[in-house]
Amino acid sequence: MDIYDFIVIGGGMMGAPCARYLAEAGHSVALIAAPEPADVQSWTGPLGSHFDAARITRHVAADADWALASARSIARYADLEARSDLRIFHETGALMAGPVEGPLADWTRGFRDVATRVTGATLIDTDDARSRLGLALPAGSVVSHEATGGGWMDPRAMRQASQALAAEGGATILPLHATAREDSTVTLANGTRIGADHVIVATGPHTASDGLLPARPALKVWARTIAFAELSEAEGARLADMPSVIWVPEGWDYDLYMLPPVRYPDGRLYLKIGGQVDSPRIESAADMTAWFRSGGDAAVADRLMTEMRAVLPGLAIERSTPGPCAVVWSATGYPYIERLSDRVTVLCGGNGASAKCGDEWGRLSAIAATGGRLDGEGYACDFRAVWA
Image (cartoon, rainbow, N blue to C red; front, side, top):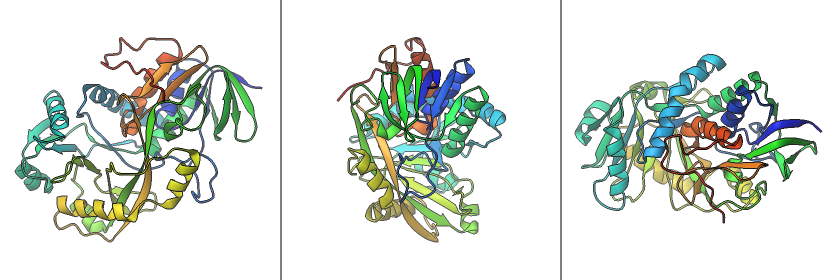
């Protein structure tokens, strides 16, 4: 049986960076990273949302800890791109807009206050947003426009870069998924068993149901629908200067997000929109598989398209399609990054932002797994796990 210093289970937005940081620090590392499925309908391994081409990234956030994690992750994109020869970051700008009254007033106040401290971000009004950016936001919204430093990032490229650089640092990449963990011995899907001094469990939305931790973490996993609007080349060119957008539609008590035109692997241009709170819960691996094979909820996608058209007057869409997504929320609102024993560390709870902050969460988990402390890293939260 092969023995390593560390085994990282999960090669996604947080696990792959964790493996990279450990390998580059000189440790022997095995990264268990299931590949992207060629066919979701026949795939029997774990499914996830990080097999995608675009996610919003920005410095401005409603919470100071998330803003700090974003800033640190964004600051490393250039180095990752240079060393991997992969394009990760697209600086199109990022906008956040929210109401000054109602249940989201504190959220709005939070990102407004952060925006005043972020270089490249300014507070504008809705008239400016419409005249300068073509966005018809609800009247009276507080609007933060991060003209530089924000935009979108490619989670697939980020994952590939992190894995490639981990391998360059000496890590062994195992393109399988783990089926069991006993102490610090891990069984892979093909029956192979590998061992390590320490195991980091970073299996994203599966962490609450895959049984790889000593107890079940307190996580809520939601089956969320996203929607894609296919654009013509001419419409894509018209919207080429559009920023990433997070906003609260008139009368809503939660926010939506929308990406600018992004060319997906099929060669076509899409606007992507998401944001949903009234979605079903995912409780098991069977639920997860069924959800991703379903293709998403068409009725939810239609509602999202209605809001997309409202904020982008005159939008010409060739066709729209729904898509499935799984979002994980922790009990604390922050990731769980904790060395639980001499044998295992937990790394989970992306709270809808693991793509843009994953590099930083991976860095912190590498510190925790090697016995380091996180209380000197500048965060107000302590990242301790909560158990169901």
